[in-house]
Image (cartoon, rainbow over all chains, first blue to last red; front, top):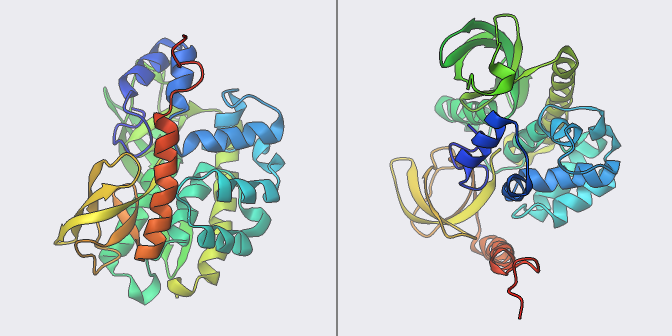
Length: 241
Length: 85
């Protein structure tokens, strides 16, 4: 369910869901989606850099899953965007992020999530309690777009084998596979024939969509790049050591 | 996806705080346990439902000014919605 926790954007989630179920677009859907204060600016950036429309399928796909459009966003443009178009971002932290990650910083949702933690004032290493580490890990794992293989299909929940992000000794990595259960909506076209062996993306407690082999390669590739870029920021952070 | 929000702590206790966010002025019950030492009147940066930074009053004022601008812009009618004479 889009924005069911209210962390992401406007409250019209029922309307968005109906659009998804009925595979309908339209002006009112576009105007609701533009109210996603964090996501929509990124779509605009990717669209601007690639000469596409913000709602061309490949644009949100680049931001959410990852694809080659991300490589066409020039670092100076992403830097300028981060200063001028991301509401509430601390300019000092933006400068620090780009100093450490440089051209490895990409307008990918997972990088946004991981770098938000990396540039925060939460301590790490011995200064962060076990409980605190679990909470930060939980936040990153829930908010990033993760992916996994469907093992069981229930009426409302899927059992999915995935690799959680691990925060250990001030570094992020993907941990050994684990199985988690997530909700899904069988009314959404992508899930109408979901079966064990399919690969899905997940966000918070929800499976978002069934993905293709090419999308699977992309999300794995860009997440690995995001982890590498974030670890560079963490390594250079005085507060994390 | 989560939005990074900034707000003022209205009350705090046992690792949680009631925060009034800049911009829309909405309230949120926030986990402040990983930043520690959060008391009433402090300013926090929140991601999801977890506070990740405590801000100085000066930084909070600067961030509030940005959110106020965004709020003001959102309240202004767009040219399309403006009533015709």
